[in-house]
Image (cartoon, rainbow, N blue to C red):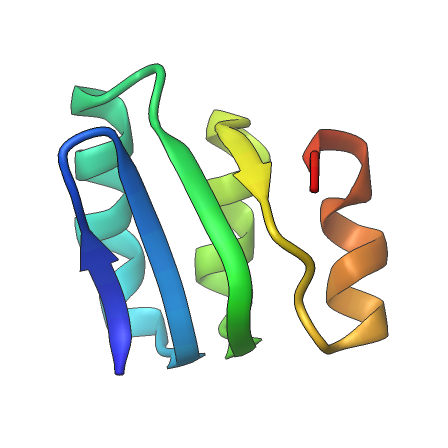
Amino acid sequence: MGIRYLKKSVTLQGRISAEEAEELQQWLKSQPRAAVNVGKCEHMHAAVLQVLLALRPRVTGTPADPWLQAALAPQASS
């Protein structure tokens, strides 16, 4: 699965590895108003979480992992 890029949003699906963090970071920098859907994300590497916390895109959806829900809660909107 991985990351699915659309015009104005990106969807994180399944397990997101550290290798995907840099590409996600570059895409989010080029799309400052983009939304990130984490509803289908089962696990994300800490590097990917750091990208989301640093760039603070609008996060939609609710990941199944309770810890990840709490980490993203300040910027999430279901």
